[in-house]
Length: 126
Image (cartoon, rainbow, N blue to C red):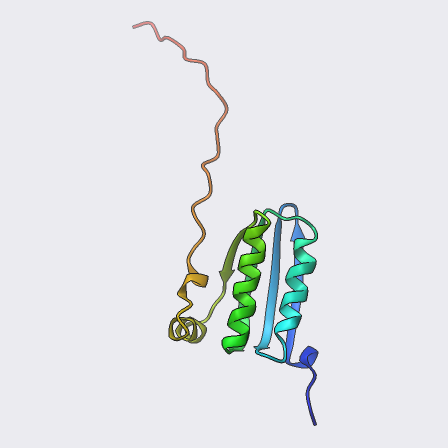
């Protein structure tokens, strides 16, 4: 029995405000990379400012899958979106390191500090 790409990999996209997340579960390889491409494209059509790929349930990733993750990053950044990968297991982190792709796991730059309301200086007699 041959499994279809939809049986090997599941994606779930969540868009909330200016943030989008694609949750990826299963095996990411030559047979399933197009599913990730499609999910990322659908998310980016909502014009988020931030895109996250959640790999917490990803069980396998080969070089073709890695290229799909890089395409997602490059496409998001070309649209002015910040990009990050979360949930990579130690096993996946090792694969990324072996395939010379630790740059996908680089944490995002720190968020800009929240500006507080302006306060008027008050002179205290003393």
